[in-house]
Each structure stands twice: as structure tokens, then as C-alpha cells.
Image (cartoon, rainbow, N blue to C red; front, top):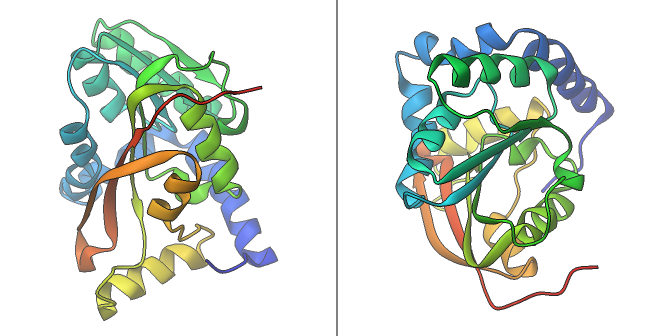
Length: 218
């Protein structure tokens, strides 16, 4: 993982404060603009989440996945830092006649008690967190023993192919971090049970980890 330059930080702030938050409907249009490819990449998270679970989605964005999670979960909560995404997803849930349990907040200080969820999921958000280990520690804190943390995000392909490596580095230039998710999960007390690479150049990965044993949190 490379350190991020000042220019990369500026681009990321612009993306989060202007594009991501204020232009939620346009961000939602990624699925249409990519002819459904974006949704196919995101929805891979669903295969790792059993039905009738208590689920938390972090960084739910425009809420398409969140609606699907809410339909199959016993309870589905969501947290996002962007007001625009919170408002957009709230309207989406209401339109689908589903409970609204979304909160604007930070992944570094999740407003939930310890071991509150069976599953914590995040898609294409974790690579944008400057303090990945701290974020993952919070995600592990709110996950019950035997529960799952499910991440879909970018990364360098293990086979080092040019297309996937180039695409991952492009994301990195835009301000994202290329984390070693399996190693980071192990440090957070999580055991990786699924690691799948897919998408263009296999630079997208689905990483599923199980929380092992009981942990004490202050």
C-alpha cells in the first residue's frame, strides 16, 4: 500500500463532498451508464449473506444493495457519511415499503453496541477509508462471534495481470487505498473463509471473514 499524495487527498475530498454526496442520483446512474456491470459487481456480496440475519451495511451509497439486503434480512441497518446518500436511500426504502434504519455517521465510531449484528457488509467503500485497520476493528466490534464481515472492493490481482493491475492503480491515483484485506482481517481477529477475484482484469474481490471466538472491547 502506497502513501497518498496531497493531490490524491484533494481529489478524494472533492469526490466525497461534491460528487458522492450532492449528486446521489447521478452516482446511482452508474448502473445504467455501465449497462448493468456495476450492479453485477456489487451484488456479489449477496451470495455471502445468509437470509434472516441482522445485517449492517456501511457506505450504502444510493441504496440499491441496501434495499435487497432489507428484503432478505431479519433486520437491516445502514450507515453512510454522506447526507445526500442517506436521503436518497431513505426515499428508496420508503418507496419499497421497507423499514428505514439508516444513520449518518463515521465508520470509525459506529453508533451500535458490541456484537449487535450477524453480518457487516461494505461494497466499494472500504478502499476509501484512510484508516483501514481502525475501520475494520470497529466492524469486527459490532459483529457477533461466528458472524461475518463481507467486503467487495478493489485490489491488485494476485496473478499480476496488466489490465487488472492498471485498473487498480487507476483507482489508487483517484485516492483509494489498495489494502491487503486478508492480512488486515487476520489482525482484527477475523478468519477469511472466502476470497474471490472477478471483474475486469480480476481486480475486484469478494472477501468474507468470520469472527472467531469472543473478544473484549473497552
